[in-house]
Image 1: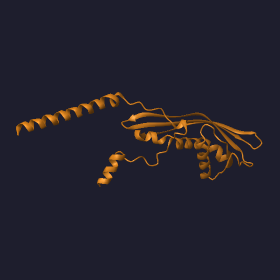
Image 2: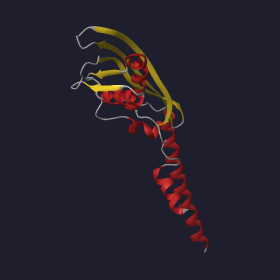
Image 3: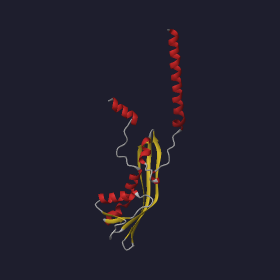
Image 4: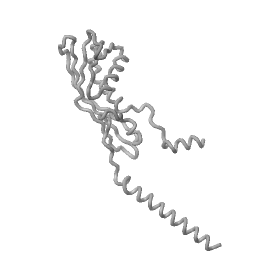
Length: 192
């Protein structure tokens, strides 16, 4: 019991949320939802590399394979049409929701072009969608990926209560505690 209590104190009062998607995973789910109508109509297709967010290719490939599609990488296309994705808008914003909680919004805007093997444009779509949820403030750095700047978010500003008032109250309590400790101790020493 003591070991469990010690671990809770060291790691925080509650365990990290299991299954909380990272910012990159949220982008992947948005992209898969945006391209679902095109990929379902094709059945077999290739995915071209995405310069701005290369991790989306793996996410879209996995979503296509889970849906039962035949997905080719850009270098092994064959006679399947190719989906070229251009990222128009991407961003992560974190806003203070309540104490120790942040409201996370992941926004992705993309334009996709389906190109036939003979370089003829079959279809073009534009999509912008968001993914929103609430996370703990301590999870925010863990959900970002350092390798991709689009998964980073600007730091959340703390309110003046957290920046000034709480440290002032803590310092005052520490000073009061020290004063009372030494005053009562010296009074006891004088009485004996």
